[in-house]
Structure formats: C-alpha cells, structure tokens
Image (tube, rainbow, N blue to C red; front, side):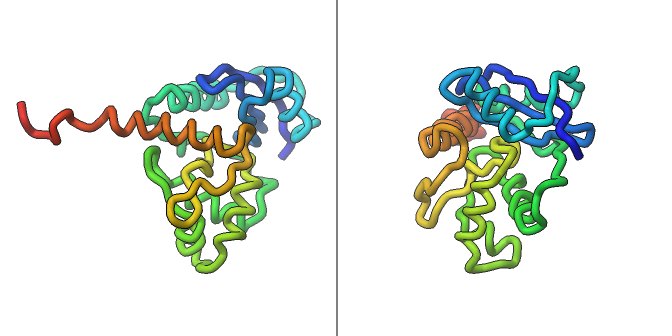
Length: 184
C-alpha cells in the first residue's frame, strides 16, 4: 500500500509526524530538532507521501497519542496500522509489544519467549529498532534484562524513552487511591 499523506502535530514532547495509507497508519515520527526536521525525517521515510486531506482515523489517532503523552491512560490498540511493509517476524514482535499496557514493561527476552522464540532477545531488539510506529507500537515499554533501558530508536534515544515511560508511570500513579483503597 502506498503512503498517501503525512502531517505534523504538537505533543507535550514536541512536534511529531504521522503518515498514512487508506488502510491505516504507515509511520510515526518523534520530534526532531525542529518541526522542519521532523517533517524531513518522515518525508525521507515516505517520499511518496503528499499533501492529502487528513482522514478521520488519523485525526482520532493524533488525539489519542496527544492524550497519552499528556498523561492520560489511553489505549492506542484500536489505531489502524498498515503493516504491508513489515516482515512477519517483526509483526509477531509488534503484536506482543502493542499489547503491553501503559505503565507496564516487558524485557526483550520476555517478548522473545512470548513469540515462541526464547533466546531471540537481540532479534527482538533489532525488530523494535525498526518499529515504524513508536508510541502506537510501544517499543519504549520493552527493556533490557534487569530493567535496564536498553536502546531506543526514536528521536532523542533513551532520554525520550525515559520521558515517555515517566509520563505513563505518573498516569498509573494518579489512578491509585491515596491510602490504599476502600477507606471513605
């Protein structure tokens, strides 16, 4: 499927970019040094994308992404994706990763085991490094053994990964009752 359009949008971490086909989202770009840099990075990935009217599913995806980055406990699993260019091995990894709820994490090894490939932690890391949909496929929720940050392919690297995890963790903490629940 061909990428039809792309658009930039403001988030709490800076201007992000999103691209789409008629079937779904084809890519998401974390903020670069400027809005122009973000657009250029996304345009390099999807040179065929032109100026197209933003479809409703893209507008809804943008709203959900912004809400998540503002600290809402939003679930992005209903955002339609266009996986036509995704290798089957990577797609299996992305399916597991997409199911990790906000505020929770898995290790590369746990993702490898979940796809039936124990011992493939490095391959999982490589596949997540190729993730065209960061945030939607929440690769920031996958950590190295022992809870270490590991790498992050999104613009800003590990600093961005830490920031997004911190935003999600605060959202989860805000849901907890002040004194452990049940007392009125």
